[in-house]
Image 1: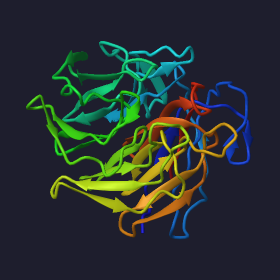
Image 2: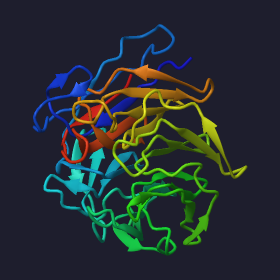
Image 3: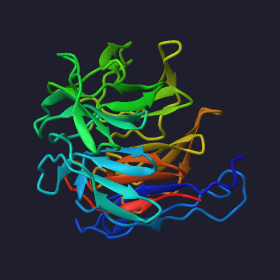
Amino acid sequence: MRRGLWLVLLVAGGCDTLSGNYYAGPDAAVADLYGIDFAGSGDGGGPALAWSLRAPLPLPRQDSAAVELNGRLYLIGGYDRSQVVVATVDVYDPPSGTWRAGVPMPGPLLSPNAAVVNGKIYVCGGLADGSGLASGVVYGYDPQTKMWTERTSMPAGSERGAAMTAAIGGRVYVAGGFRGGAAVVDFSYYDPLADAWTAQPPLPAARDHGMGTQLDDVFYAIGGRNNLLANNTARVDSFDPRTAAWEPRTALPTARSAAAVGVLDGQIVVAGGEVTGSPLGVTNRTDRFDPTTSLWSTLPPLRTARHAAGATVGFSFVVAGGADRQGFGALSTVEALGL
C-alpha cells in the first residue's frame, strides 16, 4: 500500500470548457491549474481524488520538453501560438507557485529530446522547424554558471526529434523519434562525461512522439505513433541496460501519442495525448502503470484534454504547455495532480 505521500501532477495550458471526456471549448487560455489527491487511491483510505489549479505559463506553447532540475520544472523549446519554433526556457518553482524566464537555448528546437544527468540538463537532438527537419545538435546547461554549451552532436544519420528520452546511470537514452519524414527505430545513449554517443539495440517497432521514462533503472518506451497522426499505438516496451534487451510490456489501455509521462510513488503516470476518434483528436484520460502487477489502472481525467510535455518534480508531476487539439493550439494552463 502507498499512503501518506503528497503527489501533485501539474499540467500547463488549457481552456475552461469540457464536453464529456474531451476538450470542446474555444482556444482561450485558463490562468489556473488543477491537482489530484492520491490519498487512499487503491487502498480505500483518505480523501477522494480531485484536481486543483496552479499558475499559467508565461508563454503558451506546445511540443516542448519538460525536465526536473533542483526541484524546479524546466520547459524547453517548442512552438508558440504563432507556430514559431522557439529557444525559450521557462522555469516553474513549486514552493512559490511562480514561473520565471530561464536562459534560452543557443538555438530554437521543436520536440527536443531532453533529460538531466548529474545536475545538468542535456538536450540531445530535436526538430529544427515545422517541416520535420531533424537536428542532431546537443546542448548542455549548467545551473551553476547559467550557461548552455554545445556538445558532440548525434552521429550523422541518427539525428531525430520527438523521441522517447530518459536518463539512467549517468547516460541519456534516446529511443525512436522522427527523421526524414518517418518514424525510426534508432536507439542510442549519450554519455556526458565522455561526450560521446553509443548505439543500442533498436526499438522493436518504429515510432515517434512516444512517451519515454525510467523506473527502477529500466527504460520504458510507451505509446507513440508511426508517421501519421492516425497511426497511434498502445504498445509498451521496456529496456534494461543491464541485459541490453527489449521486453514487451502490458499495453496502454488506449492508443495515444504525445502524452505527458512521469513517475509518482513508484508508478508510471500517463496523462492526455493525441488519439483518434475524439472531436479534436486529444484526450484527457489519465492512467498509471504498476510495475509490481504489470497492470494499468485509470485515474481521474485531466480537466482539459491536451497533448503535452511533463516531468516529475519532487512529489509532483508537472505537465507544462501543450495543445488542445491534434496539431496546433498552444495553451498556457498548468494543472497539478497530488495527495
